[in-house]
Length: 293
Image 1 (spheres, rainbow, N blue to C red):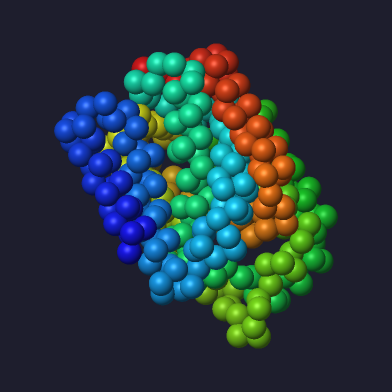
Image 2: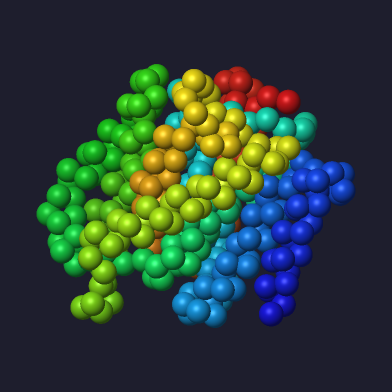
């Protein structure tokens, strides 16, 4: 009960700041509101699904692994965006320190958002056994495809050819331990049902992402397809990208269970995350015009 009301309180604070009532927080509304939403959804998932990011499996895994890994995961896409920018940020955060800290607070929500929405819609994420066997048979081809889709945005400036990057980490990591993603019972959902659930979770998360971004002072804006119809800041066809992105997030989250949930591993992940955020905020964003006031 306390967690749920804490979530509602954060949502209320974020909404009031967006409305200009809480002026000092106006540049931080996106992160505040998202954490409120995550707490509320996690509470529902725990009560109705028996699933929770910090109650099931221990808070240590959430703190030492999920949060910093989520930030690192999104930094990967930020790096790809530098080569052929698809989005940029606009906001009133002037200092590097503020950008780094707020960047972590925001980027740390990426994996939790998709996981919570998938749980909300479909319960625990598992791959059908037939698909697991197929992945094992084509593991080398998947890895090569993942590398290729990662490299293409670094040398190509055509929007359409770069969209494979949203699937690249899944293809890179799936061959390492596909059996971990298999069903725990013989009654696992079909591949078709899995695809529908992933699409629903990705689109639901994407709509909330874009809606909150639209009303936040610190926000991103897209540099792609300016003549296409938009829903919030996003060209409508861009929402399709949330589907492979959701699959990638789910794969990375499940495989992250192999990372030890201890302080040593956590310190290493936090160091990588904050180092990456500092380089982005202090050097690369300005050089590439990715952050504008």
